[in-house]
Length: 340
Ligand code: A2P
Image (tube, rainbow, N blue to C red; front, side, top):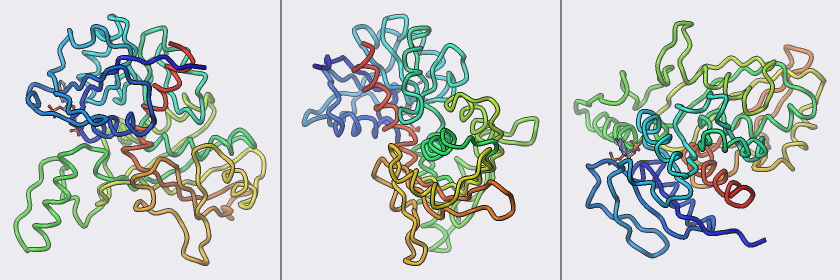
């Protein structure tokens, strides 16, 4: 089947995720007829490379989406709220990386390895949401287990890289680390506390129930993507001084028993997963293994000996690639191939 070529826009093209989206479009042979790069007024005058051309960055305005078939958004929640409906009104399908539309019942929330069929719901609003980075890598690894023996409860602690907060946070970790090493004063702008040589149990804003919004996203988004509202999820999300790659310690309780060996075997053939699990040889996934590639890495798979049906594991992925840009481009690829 010949896939039609489409006019594409990247909104937030100068940001950490937007820039990676451009790279993913390049790497994936996405059928791009034309590419429009959008950002704020501040970036007008800049140029970015795409497939050997230098393309100008334009200011995003309501007129930007005329003639655009697919827009990949990663320009912040407020911008998505304002501009995604404007783009959709012009007939452009938006794949949005912000949290704004994720829990809207009329907007599909998609991880291609888990619920690709949900994409067809894009017609309701012209918007498809890309899930939260920590949720994406968790469901890629857990969905095969859920399908085989039913997951009743997930307990997860995350170790999340600063790149998930954007470019300014990458600079903050770098600048603070350099300042500390040289015994200089450091500045705090992005995070409420020093992130270098530290761990902050605080991602996104606190809610009335004492959890952060990031922690609640892991509950609500997991249920929506796995299409099962009975799964219990409790999360503690932590920012750590790592540039790229989120790691997660995950404990699952299953309805039917499954052994660690069976999980290893199941995940060895699961889409988008690579098992790295040989503790005797010091083999387990690291953020440095995950960074710069698209697979979700799983290791430290072992029985939870404190309950009858439990498994522990360590799940790592590149938060900017599979956790954001790659997943968005994969959704757009399926959309173009099967629905447009
Ligand atoms: P700009 O670079 O012009 O500020 P990050 O998450 O890495 O901080 O990136 C955020 C992205 O969203 C950047 O590309 C930024 O553009 C873009 N952006 C922020 N606010 C707006 C806006 N009001 N309109 C369009 N793009 C925006």
